Amino acid sequence: LRPGKSGKLVIDRAQIISGNQRLYSDPIIIEVVQGSEKEISEQEEIFVQATLSDSLAYVGQQIILDYKLYTKLDVRSVNFLSEDDFEGFYHQALQSDRSSLKREIINGSEYYTKSIKKIALFPQQTGTYSIDPVDINLGIASKNSNRGFFFSSQLIPRRVTVDGMTVIVQNSPQDPDIYDSGAVGHYIMNANTAKRSLTTDEAIIVNMQITGNGDSKTVYAPRWNLPPGLEMYDPNTIEDQVFPNNNQITHRKTFEYLIVAKKPGKYSIKPEFSYFSPDSNRYISITRTLPTITVLQGSNEARTIGPSNEDRLEDIFNTTKLRKRKEKPYGSFLHWMFISFLILAGFSIIAYDIYLNKTGKRDPEVIRKNKALKIARERLSKANQFKSDENKKAFYEEIIYVLKKYISDKYDIPALHLNKSEIINDLSLRTIDTSLLNRLKELFNNAEIALYAPVSNLNPDSVYEETLDLISSLES
Image (cartoon, rainbow, N blue to C red; front, side, top):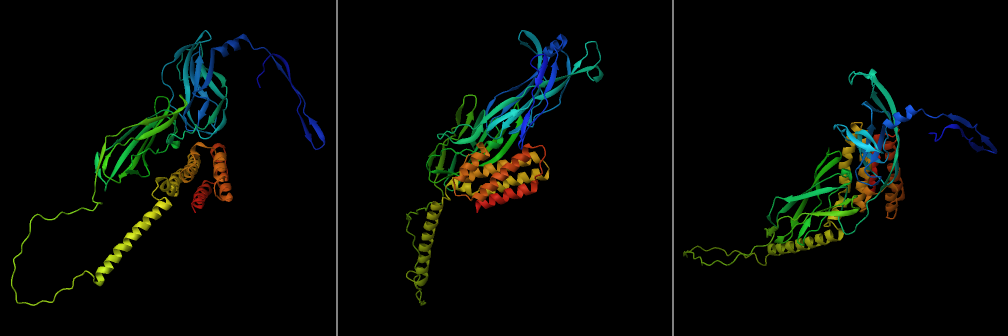
């Protein structure tokens, strides 16, 4: 509590009802005296402000929390006495600004300013979140001291409190006209391919490299349109790097697309990457036009052999030897066996083709769903490594991400951009057993509690096994 005026202030009694009785506490009387002019002037001489690059953010967006010092005094040391745990955010400290002090005019007074701490925050789910107040201890050089920086006896401690803030996190809007990649922020994209020509027996690889300042964990390889005659298989992520750059976190991903040609011709391939820009509040699409690809007919087409232009003559030799005439294969038992085999093989190929079309196994989306369990196992191996390293925070972040990524791939739900309640509600509309939904909800809750609570009795081994067992149950 901070008094707003001087004098005797009364905190009134509190009351509760216990059974049939009403119980009261004693009132508290506090005498507040006017602060001295010296204290007021010292407060005006130095303070710290916290600012957010955005107070209204989107899941997957990077926002910067900056603690900035304003001073007229010689500040030699800064010590944060408390720090928020940033519930609902993945956070990473940025390198301190090593630049010299700057001068700014605040309400007509000149201050020296410097950023003393910057933190990159990545919202993980929607909601309203509070960033707690922070206490900071500042070491101020004594005015009558000529001693150096390392002589702490000459520093006068000053404690300041930075007010808290509120961040509202929401999902980026849906746009049915674009192929969403889950990227939020600012991005650039380049694409290339090494081939300019190929046959229908071969495949072409297109690499798409994206660089941006969003949350790398929410960005996945986008689909884009191909001209008729070309078919795209599931893309792979062959590079995923995160690094600090210009007072923010930047990441780079490279996606590999395998494309096969079904028929010859000339094709124009135009990879496209779309991301949501919080600055302009709209989706931005980047398209790159690759050089024209020439596709030639491969050996999978039957070749025709024309008649010879020359008549070949053979010498005729007379002989008195008599030989038994060999039976022609046409019409024989072997001949009809061979014909039957060809007919049976043809029907088998047609039936298998119909089976693939009906089951959707030619559809890349269906292939992606079928690979969901494989992807989940691969991602869980990373979580298992975090568990072995006893990195609990990274382990539970990975568990939450694996579950959302699996649901996104398996059920075509944008789970990476939804909170657990929205995910459960969406899944409840499908033919999924209620017990599995309850297990999923409990797993989400336990992982979030372990991630954000300072102390948790959860066993990472049991969480890992439950995650794998739940995904296997959803697959069966």
